[in-house]
Length: 389
Ligand code: ADP
Ligand code: MG
Image 1 (cartoon, rainbow, N blue to C red):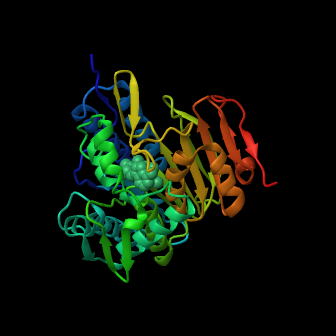
Image 2 (image 1 turned 30 degrees about the vertical axis):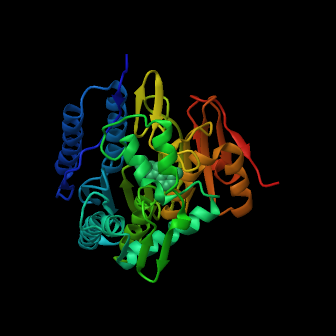
Image 3 (image 1 turned 90 degrees about the vertical axis):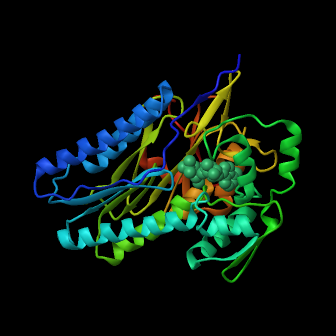
């Protein structure tokens, strides 16, 4: 019998929610509202246990970022964009409520704008226009995204590739109507994969016939950088930006301590460790984020461009920590495809970021730079530390 099980498949709807308030009661209300939104999602999305678990972890993460501070001390809003809930929080310490409010408002407007540009399913979006017509002149933001993705394709030896859209559609990852494609279909679709089939000239993008592109692997990371910049420009010196699991921070926590970010356990509930950061992004790619099961096998949404199938690199969770959300997002997806050895080689070659990997044989591997700021909760034992040699 074929068993088809979907995980925390998200629904597209727009939610804009404010955490601005005058006292602690409003802070509590904010928490309740977040909880309510996620409860609704649990109800409407069906009954997979894992799905509920993942959603509840998401609740925990949001509660942490909204909690502990009174409404006088923070301004926070949530929006549903890029297929996930995004919560942007500015702390008033050092800049005041007015500036924090203005910054958060501007961030949400910007997220909504980028979502419209980059939503492949919206016929008006830059990506739909490129995919539909084979050639389109796009916004500067889109041109920059594509230029960055093409560059990262080269740097990662093809592991990150924005041309996977037709294959992702065939697997049903864009709609939730999952199926395992047959070999002939995949072979035909593989013909159109490859970043060499995309040309960028100024703000004009062309794709070869049959090739279609998706910004999915880098959009949230780039958004994190843009939103962080808006915070800084508005004078906010302390902010937490949670873009559906992509965490990006501005400065330190109010009071001067580091942000402590939990890393989700790819095998179950809770977290397997934490990293302490300031002014950095923490981005994780994991097969557990979106997947389905059929005949006892799991199929996840990160594909190996060489095969057109879910990447089987031995890594089940890849986290990248660094100053730029865009780089962290691109690399976390790429490392999930590249596996342990190639990730270590890449890090030694280029530096400028750190990583935390979880392997399918239950090891945690971290790079030297994060060693003193990573704490394991014991779930996978102490990490193996990779050093520059
Ligand atoms: P998420 O967006 O779920 O946090 P990622 O940043 O790893 O996770 O992006 C995964 C998304 O990128 C997939 O949903 C798909 O749209 C797209 N994708 C899948 N495999 C690749 C790949 N090898 N290169 C580029 N994009 C990919
Ligand atoms: Mg990514």
